[in-house]
Length: 343
Image 1: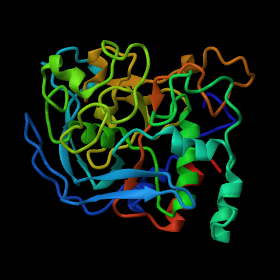
Image 2: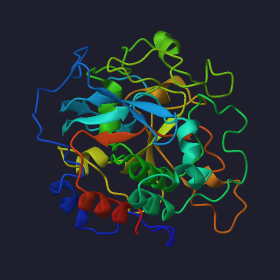
Image 3: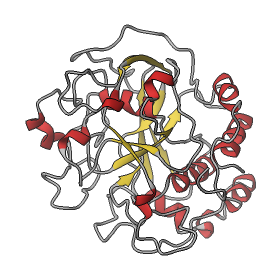
Image 4: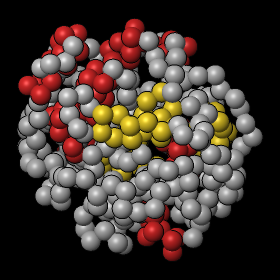
């Protein structure tokens, strides 16, 4: 553990309990043939819902990602492939909903600006629960770096901050939300394809689907300005990179389970970041590309100890929400938050 003040996933036996209790097992899984080439597995029609934050007019859309299996990782023949993208393995996942867009500032600021007064008319049990959730300390500097907030993805938060936000959101809405596992993220990004990008291997088309170094003009863009992937998700390639639940390990695919895999974090860094950003070259935006976080994300933070909530040097990282199709029980949710936030 690199920082004893905040610990994650400390119980070596909880993962098996967690899987068995349905926290990451989201429903019965039908194993299908590995997906390859341009084959597309489409979600069930109409399975999209809009979540409106109670007592506000702020909402976001969640898209159903169907249960199924796919080949995680990239083939040795893929251009710019890195060693940590293999060995490829067939992975089976249960169904979940994923944010249509990267999480925006409008929602995240409801949390970190500590708007308790806004929610005073919530049911007493919800109000008491959200009042008990610790809110982020003020950021050292503008976390958006002046690049814009209305309509833009939230950035610069730590994984701890993103997880506490998910607990807050789950409490306010009554629906369980969390970060995606790395396997869930890649499955949703590939959207039934086996090519370098969800639209194929032709990098000349990347500008139609992604905001990245070549076309970003040195800043991020509003969410949804480019074309979506085959499953209706926007900005899975580029704009901002996205946190996942997993600890980064170079050999993750060789040591992880084949069904609902999850590498439990035992340290704050390195964590897996996916998707590439406005400040990355095209190769980092590939569906199978992996990036590891490090303490360098807080290089310019002068505080001692450094903030658990904000990363001064991560104006290219945000996150996307996931909600299990089969919702965990209240007790299972309680166990989850106790584990990931060490409460």
